[in-house]
Amino acid sequence: MVQTHKLTYQYDGNNQFSFPDLSCASGEILLILGKSGIGKSTLLNLLGGLMPSRSGEILIDDTKISDLSLSKLDKFRGSNIGIVFQKPHFISSISVIENLLLTQKLAKVGVDKNVCLQILEDLGIAKKANAKISNLSEGEKQRVSIARAIVNKPKLILADEPTSALDDENCQKVVDLLNQQAKKIGAALMIVTHDKRLKDIIDNQIILS
Amino acid sequence: MSLLKLAWKNIIANPWTLVLNLILFALGIGLINFLLLFNDQVKEKFESNLAQIDMVIGAKGSPLQMILCSMYHVDNPTGNIKIEEAKPFLNPKHPLIKMAVPLSLGDNYRSYRIVGTTYDILDLYNAKVGQGNKWLHDEEVTIGAIVASKTGLKIGDKFVSSHGFEEDEDLAHDHSALKVVGVLEPTGSVIDQLILTNTATIWNVHAHEGESHDHHDHEEHSHDHDHNHDNSVEDLLNHPEEEITNILIRFKNKKNFQSLSMPRNINENTDLMAASPAYQINNLNANIGVGTNALRYLALLIAFVSGLSIFISLFKSLQERKYELALMRVNGASPGQLAWLILLEGLVLAILGFVLGIIVSHLASALMGQAMSDAYQYDFSAWKFGRNEAKLLIASLLIGIVAALIPAFKAFKTDISKTLSGK
Image (tube, rainbow over all chains, first blue to last red; front, top):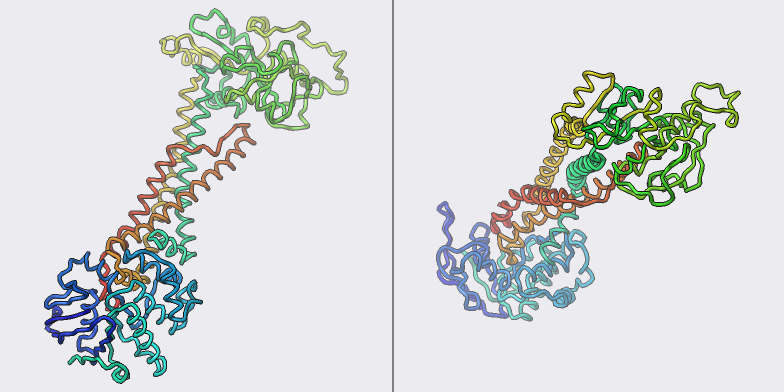
């Protein structure tokens, strides 16, 4: 269960964003739509605990992350929030499976190779477990990126423009995949995007303005 | 997937950078360690062969050359001295001298020097006869342990010496064969590399010099020394016209004023030369020190450059990996963990470089030891590890840490949201 209340953010300039109150239950999807420059990235950074919020509240599974100290925020983020970035980044010196194992290790949730392999299996990329990231196709990279977001069974999965670079067919596939995996682990799924195609796929939506 | 393993994977992800870093590091550490090893062993060799010899007497020339020749057996003699002139110092009743050991040099067998001397030389180097006996008659020899093992000479074997100190077939004294009657136990000192005999044997060999080989015949030749020599100093004193090369002297009390001033008195008032080994060897060490110091500065420079090279490669890879670091933060890594990762990379490089450098320096020492052993019959142990290595390890770790400090700090300051949004 994820909720925000009176969330605002002001950069050093005068650029102030106030966000509508959001709510997304476990196993549900929330689509957050908005044009460029409307504060989508800022909202994503706040929800993901990537930068400290300045006013308002963010509740993730009864934890008010807007009140956490920086080091507690690091810990909380590692085990409770999974993020799928628009452009997938990985540790390039290690293999696919090692990237997942490192994610478990950093979140201190216990390293379990079988869990990692099962996820890769579910996402249809089990064969690439020992491949170097640089040897993957873009589609495969995106799947690994999803695998990494869910490997620690987070309470919240955030996806930043996961479909904007994809054709219609793959766009649908990725959303289905995200949806399935989120439901499977009982996480709230929030997709932040300007991709209008998703409007027709996901009912529960909010438009930033 | 521990941080150490990740650091390792990151390091080997750029093999050429790794190779460059390791070569530089190993070169710096290796050179420094090689110099230390070399210095230590040369010093140790010089010191172990001092054998409490307080003064050496010989013909005028270079005092250092005389010391090197008579005590370390690595240089040529400054010449010979008449027993007549040296008489006072060979006198067993001399009030200041505890022990005077005459040396007669001039021949070798397969580069091992044949030394005509008295039994006192065994006491000087604390040598004991292992097998057989001490030399007794003319043309009998007792050989050092290394001579025995390297040449394969055994008791009862006969061999022909050659003139000078280099092995040379043309210079073989084909007339007189020497006979091995004993082998010394190993002592670790220079005596292991010597072939010992009485002084008269050297005289006999050289009494033939200058004779025409045509009418040379062993049987009919009756040389000047037809009586049997014993091995005493008194016997030498009975031949004042003959020559010896050096006298090694141990004083009764070396701190005694008369003992201390004796070398100068000899140098000023006689045709002989006297030198103090400790003084000459200190001088030599100081002179070698100038050369090794220059090399040491070079080695320090290389070590500094290798630190710089690690710094630059960490810094560069940090720029390339800034997304990876931000991503690790997203996944729950603390800033401290990122800094630790970078420090680990510096440390792993330093430790690898150190290990490689130590191996290289010992290999170089082994080669050097081989060369030393071929040239001077000197044993040089290349695989001794000591305190220097521990100090170098600490220095290496420091270089690794210092080189990684700024990159680690930069990693510590990674701003997740700015990095990931490309700002």
